[in-house]
Image (cartoon, rainbow, N blue to C red; front, side, top):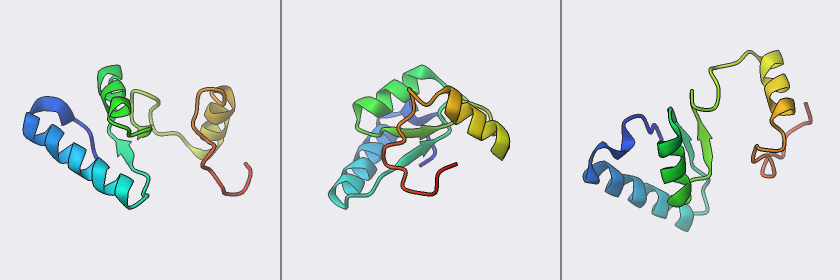
Length: 87
């Protein structure tokens, strides 16, 4: 779900709430992308969307930089749902 300019209209906010409600009922995790500011991140958290990506958190990173970023921010990241191989 791309969230750039998400809260510009009530219609967009209503569509977001429907998408999040459907995902919750189907037990599907949603990743909101395009998060560019704290206001959007906080609004999504309030609505129950806990997985985000975007320039607010970091610019796109190469694998070795991503690993370092994850290590440096490990206490602030939601990685408890990660079930892949260890890095």
